[in-house]
Image 1 (cartoon, rainbow, N blue to C red):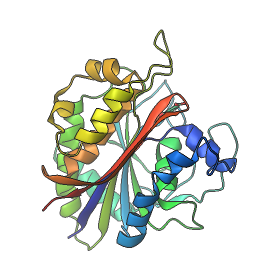
Image 2: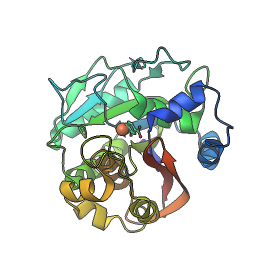
Image 3: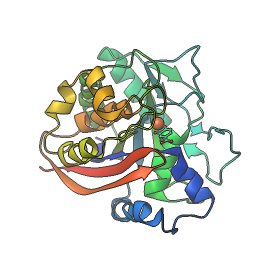
Image 4: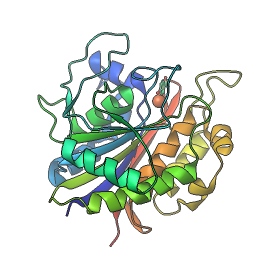
Length: 280
Ligand code: DHB
Ligand code: FE
C-alpha cells in the first residue's frame, strides 16, 4: 500500500518565482527567505517521495470568475505551466500520477467529496512556487504530482472543517492505493495577506507565527475557526491557509515539526513553511 511520508505547508507568493527568474536568490532581500527552505530541500533529497499531492488554489489562470469549482482534481499525465503574464518560465511541465489520481477521484466520490475532474489543467504559482522551493529547478521533476484545487478566491469559499475532513479522507485514500509509492502532501498559500479592498496590504505576523508554531501540535483551533475568522485574522487572501488544513488533516494527531521558517514581508505577504512527520 502507498505510504504517507510527510506533510508540507508553504506559502506560494508569486514574487518568489519572479525573484528566482531574475537571479535574485542570493540578494540581501531574498537570501534569508530562500535559505529557510534548505532543510526541506535536503529532506526531499534524502527521503525521495515518489508522488506529491499538492493542494492549492488557482488564481484566475485556469478557472476565471465565470466558473470556479469549489473542489477540483487533476487526473492528467502532464500539467503545463500557466503563463501568468510575464512569459514562459524555465521550469519543466509537471508529470502527473494519473493512476493514483483516478484512485483518489474514486475514493473522494465514494466518500461524498465530488471534485471537478480535470483531464487537462495548467497550474499557476500556487503549485509552481512550492515545487521549486523544495525541489529546485531540475531538468525533470523528481516526483509525479496530483493537483487538488480549492476555491479560495471568490465567496463562498469552503469551510476549514470541510478542508480538514477532506484531509482525513485523502489519508485513507492514499493508504488504500495498491502500490508502494511514497507520498508527500503539500498544502500551499498564505500566510497573512490581503490584496484588495479597504484593508489591502494587511498583514498579521503575530498570527502567522502562532500558526507556524501550532499547526503541527495544536491544530484544533484552526480547524474549528469560521471562514470569516480566517479573513479577519489573516486577511482575505490569507484565508488561503485553509488549504494547509487538508495537509494537516492527512496527518496523525501527533506530529513532529521537522522544520519551520517564517519571513515577512515577501511582496505584501507573510511567508513561511512547516514540514511535518507523523510522530508514531
Ligand atoms: C501575493 C500572494 C499570493 O499568495 C498570491 O497568490 C498572489 C499575490 C502577493 O503577496 O503579492
Ligand atoms: Fe495565492
